[in-house]
Structures are given as C-alpha cells and as structure tokens.
Length: 306
Ligand SMILES: [Cu+2]
Image (tube, rainbow, N blue to C red):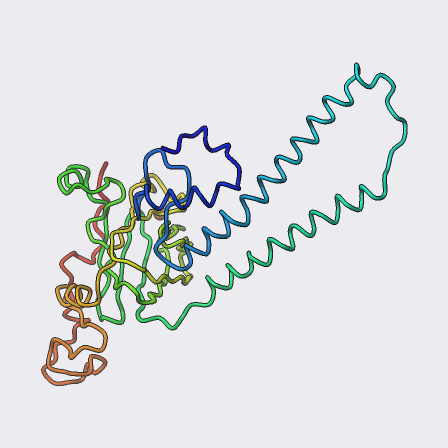
C-alpha cells in the first residue's frame, strides 16, 4: 500500500516505486490510491517513465532538499538572536557565478534526455497500419483506411451496461478501437467541431484533435489487453464522457475483427473475389469500403445522456 504520506519519500526510491507499481497497479486504467504514473505497454511510455522517474524526480528532489536546507540554515543561523549584528556587505562574485552556472548545467543535462524523448516520439517506425481518430462533441469516430473500413462511432458505455459487463464506467466505450499487438499503429487525430485530445496513458500519448488540422501520433503495444484513455482537452459539457477504449489483440484476432466489420485485412486475400484488396475494379468484388457499413451507424448519434 503506497499511502499518500509516502509521497514525501525522495526520488532515490522512485525506481523502487515503479518496480512495485508494476506489480500492483492495474494496467491500462487508473488504480485507486496509486501515486505513480500508470504502467506502460509501449516503448514510448517506458521512455517517458524513465525520463520522469530516473531523471526529473531525483533532480527535483535534490534541488528541493537543498533549498530547504538553505532556508533552515538562514532561519537558525541568522535570526536576530543568534546574529544580532548583521554583516553590511553585499555581492559575492563566486557565489553569483555558481548560482547562474549550476542551474544552466542542470538544464543542459535535462535537455539531453528531453530531446532524446522528443525525437523518439517524432521518429515513428514504418507503420503497419493507420487509424483516423476524430473527436466530436462528445464521442470518438474511428476510421481504418487500410482495412477499407469507414468511420464508426464510439460512445461512452452507459453505466448499467458497464456494471453488467464488469468494465469501468466512464472509461469503457460502446465500440473499442481494436488494434494488433506488436505492430506500429499510426493514429491521425483531428477534431470535427472543437478541440479535443486523444490520450491513452498506458501508451504515453496525448495528441490534440484540432478541427481543420491532422496531427499524428503512434504506438506499438507490447502485450494484449484493454487500455483506456480519455479526451484530454476541455471540450464542452460532456468532455468527461467521451472515453477511449483500445483493445490490443493478436494479429489473427484482429483480422477476424476486421472481417466481422466487413473490412479487408491488410495483405489478405480479400474476403470478396479480388485478391488484391487495392483493386476495387475487380469484377464482382463488392468494394469493402462502400459495402463497409459497420454495425454501428456512422451517422453522428446523439451523445449518450448522463
Ligand atoms: Cu473532447
């Protein structure tokens, strides 16, 4: 049990925290009473957690303790009683150079790791597939262009249904975003009305969904599971009620899901007559995209009421 009081423990034990957190914390969703960051299932998330726990936290902790020590020293050593006659001098070149140089060096040290992380986010490996995620007031729409699946709507799962299924209310969605594990998935993020943000903590990603603009992010999930996220930009009254549910499954399960949604899996002999799914001209091949009415209506539905 990592009680809140333990939060005062220093950065030196941060590594220990994360180790124990992995054992205790729920993966893909928040844990009651937890204090560390949600454990990750992508390389980016591991890098981000390392940057926070191994670089930033020890530095922040050391600086805080150092400043606290200086304050205590001043209070004890230089109060009116113990130091009745204060010195009259000001300026000390050595001290002034030090308190300028040392912070600069600390920032340079941090920036090395910071830029490394930034580049890791930017340098997406060659993606296996692309998903387009569109934020609406107040739900998400997901499109799978590579699988020729037109956009379907993902709403919040109502409370009674979430309870019945034993899934977390306000995190579970009516239609999950299904992706294969171990594959680089590119997500194109945009907004249809106002600014939303596509965020999944276990993947270490948060990307603004801006109307009229397409942002890009990516993830490569290490193990199967269900990972929850939320809209992370205040977008209106139902901002808290447009969750993101990502289900990471094996390639075979993913292909089966694509077929069940009337899409065509990448590189497969298409379910219809044409072997090349890119060839919509093949006679008799019902174009999956056109036929691709998904089980959920792509028409914007009224947001669930709460
Ligand atoms: Cu939103």
